[in-house]
Every structure is written in structure tokens, then in C-alpha cells.
Amino acid sequence: MAVYKIKDLEQLTGIKAHTIRVWEKRYGILNPERTDTQIRTYSDKELVSILNVALLNKSGLKISRIAEMSEKEVNQKVADLRGNYVVETSYEQLVMSLVELDENLFKSTLSNLIEDFGLEVTFTNHLIPFLDKIGIMWLVGSINAAQEHFMSNLIRQLIITEIDKIEVPALKEKPIMLFLPEHEWHEISLLFYQFVLRKMGKSTFYLGQSLPYDAVVECVEKIQPACLVTSWLTSVDGAFVKKYFQRLHNDTNGLKVFAGGYQMKLHGDLISNWAVIVESVVDLKHFVVSI
Image (tube, rainbow, N blue to C red; front, side, top):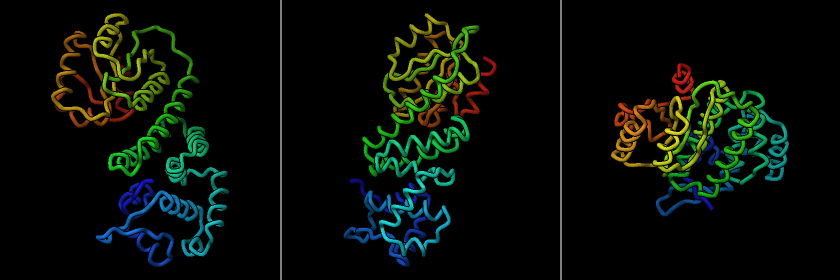
């Protein structure tokens, strides 16, 4: 069972820590444990409880009214809301589905967002903020690896489904080759790049996770791509990043490389001579339009 501090709850729910304290004191909505040094700690059950409160509050119920309701009444109201998708509560639905490992809730929430806004807007405006907050919680140990894998694989499946809906472009030009380096298994961003490029009508050659360096070079020689697109999230040493891209530049005769992900932003100054840093999907679309 995960243990959360009040700042974790603030990150995950978007509700200010001060507000959470007021709700506790005035309405008794939560009853946290306290450490020997009087630091509040919260369980999964309490995280779900405050997410339920946020959902009901956004639906129009006052906090004072919610505080008067029994646990059974709250759960029934929330169950009713789950069956009625509302954009304003989609974030809470996503977090709740993660905590409770609720596949149906996760899929239905994302599917509704995609139906309303399309995958590109859903990913940029809803999934990225969600993933950023979840990533922080995973790093500090509030969310375990099983939850992170559960969520990542559902998102991965969903993006692949959306890619499969796009007609494969005719090979009228050199393809764009997408890959992750040998140490990298976090595929969501690269899959999203693949979706965006296919949506633009670009020919792509997708190679996915953890591709050995020699295979990258051999594939470049074989298919002669217009450019390379990659994404790095896993923590790596700056010296390794610099050496990798310098070597890749030399071994591919200066082929243009577009690199996204947190590690690329972190080490961008080290590789600026050999790669173009992609900070957003807008960047990616702008960069490749002239390829």
C-alpha cells in the first residue's frame, strides 16, 4: 500500500495543501495518520476519498454537503458520475483509475477525450500533465512499478490503436526512421511522434524500444531515411549522451537527428552540434515539414 504526504496529494489531485488541511479540520473529510514528528501521511484509500470529493465538488456539490454524506452515498454519487463523462473531471478519473487499477475507467476516460478532441490534443493537454505528475510520484515511491506499467501499457495500446486507423502512406519519399536507444524502454512519446508523423502523411519506419547502436547504423545504411527521430527518458550520464550522438552523427554521415524526451532537454547543450532538440509536438511538426 502506498503512503502519501500532503504534498503528494496536492500534486496528484490539484487541490492545495492548505485546502486539504481545512477540509480535514472543518469537515473531517480525511483522517490521516501522523508520524512521530507529526507529519501527515495518507493511504490509497484516503487518496481515493479526496479524489471522490473533488469529483463531486466539480459536479456542483458543496463541500459542506459532501461532508454530510455517508461513504455509501459518496460512492454511489461517484459511480453515477463515472458513467457520465465530463471533461472537467477527466484528470481525477485518470488518477483514480491508476490508484484502483481500473482498466475500464482508464480506457473509457481516454476514449471519451479522444472522441471529443482527437489524440493529439488529448495527449498534449491531458495526458502529458497527468504523466508529469504521475512521474514525480513514481520517482518518490508513492506509486509503485506495477501501477506505472499498468498505466503505460494502456496508453501504449491506445496510441497504437489510433495509429492503425491511419492509412499507411505510400512510399513516395525517404521515410523518417524512429527508434529508442538500447537502454530505453519508455515508448509512449515515440509512439506519439509516430502518430503525429503518420497523421501528417509522412512515410515512417518505426523500430521501437531498445535498438542496439549497431542495428541503428545498419538500418540507416539499408533504408536511407530522410532523418532520425528518437526520445530519451531514462536517466543517463551526460558524457554518454554526448559520445552517443557524436558517434551517431559520424557513422551516419551527418544525417539529421531530432531528439525528444526529458534527458534531451537536460543534456541539450551537450549534443546541440549533432541533434535538434524536440521540446513539443509543435517543434516536431515544424522541423519535419521541410524534410
